[in-house]
Length: 276
Image (cartoon, rainbow, N blue to C red):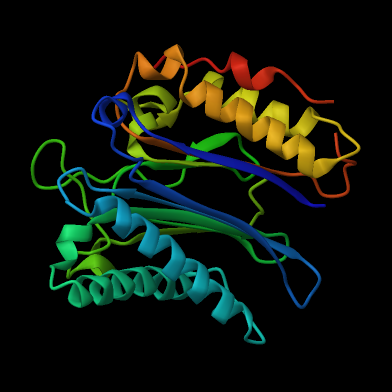
């Protein structure tokens, strides 16, 4: 095992009050490369609140990215670069466009944000983003925000993968080193996880998650990950979060373990500091 990763999507209180589902979706997967490395993929999508089928758009986008990445990995070589990012977001854009056409609707009826990170030891790290939400990485110099969350023309607006100019608004950052700590989240957590005045990660928010994944030990990794995932879900539905946001929220957390042995279930997940 080289990566340990958990993720949860939870409905916001505004959706719960109206008996609406969570409009976020998330992909996290590990792929064995021909060279023997494990590639980690973490991708998050958030359906626009202004789009009638935004949640469905997020699901279509995630499924399209997963299929495009799997297809690309079947080729002999892969580079974590802007070219690959464009392939993935184009797959999401086209998948939603096809879905909209089949239902006699417009792509913007399925509008969603899309952001993700790919990382492998010999390939480095690549982050890509259209819209708000955030990707926080540690590539050797402490936690940093990969891409500043995007704002649209007006307040409380952002960009979506369904836009005609999605390629122009796509932001991509590549890093030669491997990111050993990764967090990706939708905009429901922005005010909690980031200092929005400086675009700097709020480290006390993230530290307990990374520590829990690094320190946890169990003879059964699958059971351990289930326990950690449930703890993450309880946190996202707890008062520290829900008192600060009524939006849907998704959080994916990953750590690189390398040759470290699987680690005691930790209670650190419940200790995350949600203060901005």
